[in-house]
Length: 46
Image 1 (cartoon, rainbow, N blue to C red):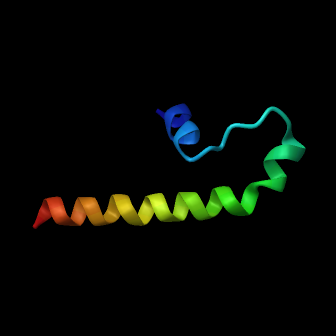
Image 2 (tube, rainbow, N blue to C red):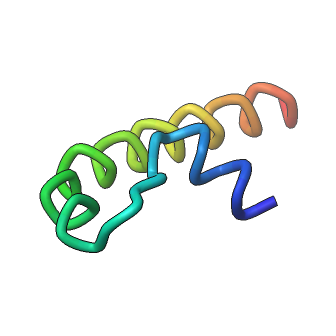
Image 3 (cartoon, helix red, strand yellow):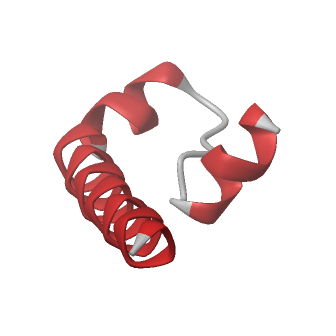
């Protein structure tokens, strides 16, 4: 499951240096995905 989430947000890099250079963009994607999932959860619960 964790691999699927990493692939979905584009968090797949061959080298640590490459991953670190994209850290901010990946964190923003994770934040957006979290907000979307929370919204969908809340709509489902209504």
